[in-house]
Length: 123
Image (cartoon, rainbow, N blue to C red):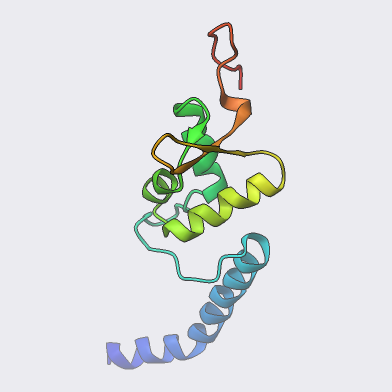
């Protein structure tokens, strides 16, 4: 009998739940350009941290120097997605590219670099 009650309930509520989920996906894609599914490891009621926020948090922690690998690891996103977000910040003028001695490129966020006097930024 319980099975029948559950089936009837699902019959009436499932279409609305699917509609809400699809709407949320379209909003996310429109706002952030994200098309792939997100891992469900954030727990109930918690939203994943946006990649741009991960970049800014790491820049503050690391004195303005950040690599796509660090962002990918910290933000739980593919490295290509991390690099794409960082390149977008470069194109908008918020981020700069800096070659490393080993030939790799790292990204520099000048707002988070210590000033020449040795003090940390006030951001």
